[in-house]
Image (cartoon, rainbow, N blue to C red):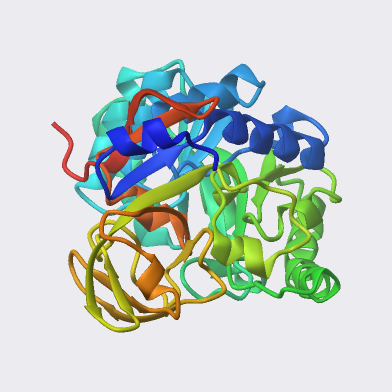
Length: 365
């Protein structure tokens, strides 16, 4: 048990628990894969906690990606040198982002665009508020969620370069659709999908258009992009890890740095047990199993899930007394963290306090 029985008995359930020593180990492994801390631009959406941002900054990581304005504000409050909002903003978020940049000149604030309308809207707000932000061109390499295809990106890239209101940062290339368990197949697909980006870079070079930076990949592919030159790497789940990625990507050497505490609260049938781990405590958009309960994971079938309850069938039901505690690894840690306002911090098996999930908020004051 990574947590003493005394510590467990003092904690309510469900509670999300973070282990800073494991977080630090994951940071060290990210840097080892990248080769140098300055190549990393980790995504903060997984954990949304200022303390984990600061841990990375103390390790030499100064550039970050985020998905919300709350996360961007957390980064400027932490003193990060660069904060990239990697979700194309619309109004009124554009104005909020531009004003955030104006108020925090020590952080280089940037975002992404994939069309001229968004570019013009950002230019307009930068002109109105008399400031400038960075722009990365968002390239669609196959995920088909956002972005412009590399084959069609030349004119828009030139438009960003020629703009007087914003400053060109480079390309943003996210390949979250590549989730092959086999590393060689994952690498093949990643390299194939990156070829149009390389061709775009060659065309831009022929036109003497600078590309200051390429930000590429996510947790499954950042070790592949680490083999390319002049590419920033953007893992995110690697900071806390989860069993969804852990089971799928056995080649990635990260530790589970966040566990969730739950207890048996009822035994409604001969082989049934109910845990206090509902939709409101653990991410539930995935099929079962949504959590891996340590010590019982090989003899359990989840049969029901609702707002406050998780029902499972197990041959060990008769052994499990009401109130018995389990630690679980979430299938998907990112939305699980977003369900909790605070996490309990455990060092050397004992609870040492709590961390606030700083950027959980949606509406900023």
